[in-house]
Image (cartoon, rainbow over all chains, first blue to last red):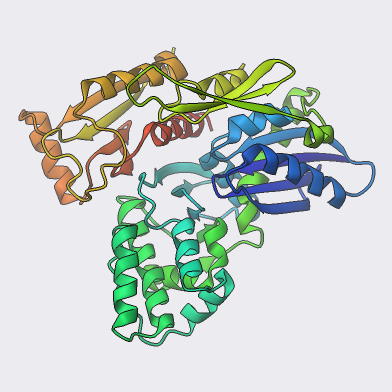
Length: 325
Length: 110
């Protein structure tokens, strides 16, 4: 049986999706990255191998996400794609009539406008963490709620409170202030969901032609209160696809299947043994500018496979160059 | 050879980050920062990209018109505009910039 693997390594979560030749999802995984992208890629490979039917041959591997080039080097990817392309391809596969894709992940968010099956426009988030999944996670943790409890409690809100949510620092202090004023937790957290949705629409979606059908994906789509807040704000149905959290990985798998099939090439996938490979990392201080960033180098068998950690990507680009060759 | 993609960074060197005091992202008033960004874009994408930096604190017919349009549409500064379309409105760093350019290239190749 032939299969195609997509890996989406984000700063907060690492996602895996395995498709068969008919583009059916046969296995998927959603793991926390925990600041250890290499280890999580290795762990993911170990886990997904155990979920596969017998006699599966990996015919292609595609990577996406913020650590897509690094993941590509580790596994021997056949294709490395931007998240915009990967998410659009996956959504169009499941919901061909889609016109707007809302994607909110742990650290990044984006909007993709689709017309006639093609990406017509897109927008991305700013460097500010306001409105990201990590911020919601942090607030849930602060209130001692799981993200499921956070979502359920927010859905029970009867009188949402207005939260100052332009900035994460002010949002948190405003939430604490509203708690001290005696507002109910469910009203505060649904108020937070609403302000995050408004921020996203006023910032990431500025000037974008949002039309239904609207698909909401990424890890934040687990939060049903965010789905409700989008529905209320946009006054239309919001579709959350069944595998919304791994759509980027599915897109990477679909893209690599197409690439490999069109070019009839052998996959460069290094095999599941990669999960047992001992990589060595070593840091050094970059002196190219006054920022003096600490750069981490990834070594294997005396060769530098990748570098990362700079405020610019003076060193990171080597990984990208390697993959583009 | 196809026409290069035009990447415009719109900023105001006299009022950095009006909306937030966090000073995240790149200081576009710094000539070194602009040189670094230009170099990184060139190294990564070669001649596919044409960079343009528009400082709205400079008063000329183009910046005046652009400033009015951005205020009308509630755009934040700095703004990243690629081939005339807004991609990021507000502070961004080199990773966001390179990501947006890469997405633009992939989108155009559809």
